Structures are given as structure tokens and as C-alpha cells.
Amino acid sequence: MVKGRGSFDFGFFITVMILLSFGLIMVFSASSASAFYDYNDSYYVIKRQLMWAVLGLFAMFFMAGFDYKRLNRLSVPILVVSIILLIAVLIVGTEVNGAQRWLGFGGLTIQPSEVAKLAVIIFFSSSLAKKKDKIKKFFTGLMPYLMILGVVAALVILEPHLSGTVVIALVSVILLFAAGARIFHFVILSLPAIAGLVIAVIVEPYRMRRIVSFLNPWEYKMNEGWQIIQSLYAIGSGGLFGLGLGRSRQKFLYIPEAQNDFIFSILCEELGFVGAATVLVLFLILIWRGIKIALNAPDTFGSLLATGIISLIAVQVLINIAVVTSSMPVTGMPLPFFSAGGSSLLFIMAGMGIVLNISRYSNNRG
Image 1 (cartoon, one colour):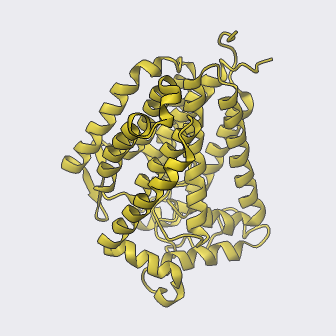
Image 2 (cartoon, one colour; image 1 turned 90 degrees about the horizontal axis):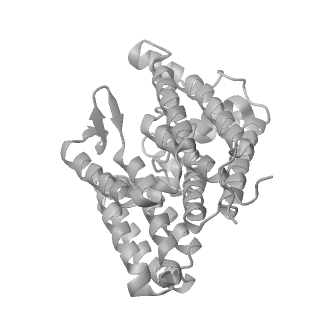
Image 3 (cartoon, rainbow, N blue to C red; image 1 turned 180 degrees about the vertical axis):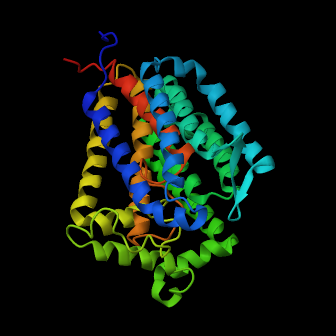
């Protein structure tokens, strides 16, 4: 018998709050130099990030009190709205550095791809919970989801936003696998997926240059290899305990926009191996608590929903750390809770609220 609503998972909640607080401290530290250079205001970036953090907290607490079962009925409208936003950004979106990924609303901008990440998780979780064993069939079970994923992925990659496409695809595959899809089907599908990824790299020269510079960054140290080399300098300079909070040297315009995708490098430089390991342990605790919530959810929808949201965090953390340590080619992947970026933080916090709400109905409560 499923229990009624109780208190949410405090361990998960406190981990989210520690990561958020830690992230805000690092955003200020990493951005102060470039913000002063660009805006003559060292607090420019952190003020905007604090605003989004407050909005994120409202979103988290709202979703923590919003019965997640109601998302079951809203899954289709949420997906449709996200697709409309993805189309709109291609038509009237704001272009930055050659990418058209942002929609402006007054003085605020959001990335529709961030909306799409959560929308796909909600829709897939709702639909898969009803399909059950049908997902084991390829054409009548798996194919419809692949077609929906294809539409969303195509719109995101047109921005262009390859890393966002990869994240949505990986999280979708994790959800399909968790729902019971056959491994054999994924093995077969991996061939065209890899071919598509290769084509996506080849057709965009800057992506090919990133691959080449990844293989030998020192040969391209004054252009494509610059960012990753500076990242490695930052990580190596940190040693065991770091140079001290706020004392990074690489943030002084050596790493472009250090508060964004390469903020983990600055963290390593300032707080060393101990600080970096602490952050990774916090992420592991968050993922562990999230998996526990998914396993103890009172229904399949709640279990898949928690699985998808936690997978989203895990995939982004894994790719971000791999990029800044030169374990994979450079791609624009924010570190959850840490990288500066309003819509990313807002929708991550909303996702955390959904997981907290699921934990209130846990079958494993006291």
C-alpha cells in the first residue's frame, strides 16, 4: 500500500543546497576579473546568478509541493510547448558567438534546450509508465520514442547545440533502458547514431578543429587548443590544497569566460585536489540519494521521472569534468549548480524540486 505524502528527503535537499551555495561562491570567484574587465563591475555576473538562484529556489520549493502525479496529465502539453520554443528560437532567437540558442523575455533570456531536457524526461516517463512491456518491441514500442527524440534533437542541433543534443539523447536512452527496452535494439541503433554524430562533426568546421586540437592541443596552443591548455594549467597549479579561494591566476582572462563551462578548472586551481574531490563526492551523494528515491518511488512514473532527472545531472557532470580534464574534445557543457547561466540553473532547480516531491511519497519512509 502506497503511503500518503510526508516530509521530503532531507539528505537530498541539504546536498542540493550545499552544491548551490558552493556554486555561487565559485561563480563570484571565477567571474570577478572578467566582469570588471567587460562591465567595470566585479559583481555583475554574480548579481545575475544570485537572481536566477532565487528564482530557482522558488521553482524548487514550488515543484516540491506540486504533486508530481499531476505532471502525468501535463506531459504532452509540456512537450508541445518545449517544441514550440525550440522552433521559436530558430526564428526570433538571440544569436551569441554564432549560436542561436536564447529567447529574450524583457531583460531575461532562457535557453529552450533547457526546457526541452526536462520536457522530454517528463513525457518519456509518463508514456513509458503506461507502455510497460510494449517497449520491448522495436517498431510499435521503441520507434515512436525515437521519432519524438529525433524531432527534438534535430531542432536543438540546428541552433547549433551539439552538446545539448547529446545530453538529451543520452538521458532518453537511459530512460528507455530503465523502462525495459532491449539492449540488442540499442546496439543496432548505435551504428546510425555514431554515423550521425560523425556527420554532425564533419559538416561544422569548428567541431572538426576541436577534435584535431583535442588530439594534440599543444600544436594548436594559440587558437583551438588554448582553452584546454589553460584549463590544464589551472588544474595542475592547484596541487593538493589549491592556491586559495579567489587566488586563481587563470581566471584573469587566460580561460575565456571562466565562470561558465570551465569553472571546475578554477575550482581545482583555487581549492586543489581536496576541493575538487569534495565537489565530486557531493555530486555522488546527490546521485546516490536520487537513485534511492527512484527505487523507492510509489509508482513507475515517479521512478522513471526521478531516474531521468538524476541521469541529467550525472551525464552533464561526467561530460563537463571529462572536457576540462582533456579526456574528451571541448564542448559547451555547463557544470550543474556551478556554471553561470540562468535558465540552466532554473530548470535544474525545478528538477530537484520534482525529485523532492517524489521522495515525499516514498515507500521507504520511516
